[in-house]
Length: 70
Image (cartoon, rainbow, N blue to C red; front, side, top):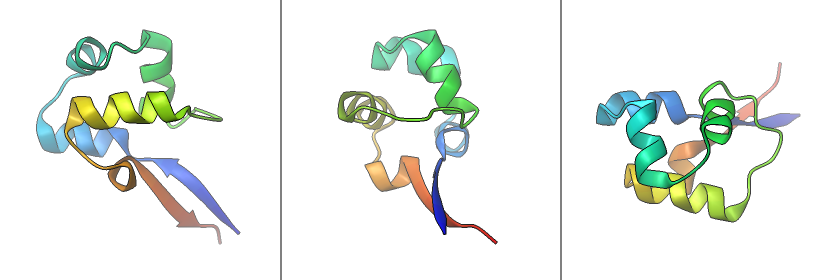
């Protein structure tokens, strides 16, 4: 079985972007960004993904990873 993981911390580190900058650029709530940063989101809307990708200048597949469970 596979599960989807959020790779937001790695992308932000690669681009030297702080959580505050992501909040400002994306217009998302602190709660939403925090949940994504710590991979605690149970579901994400297309709009949220779009805002994150736009703010980080990346693609959806950069943000979401499909990981095989052991």
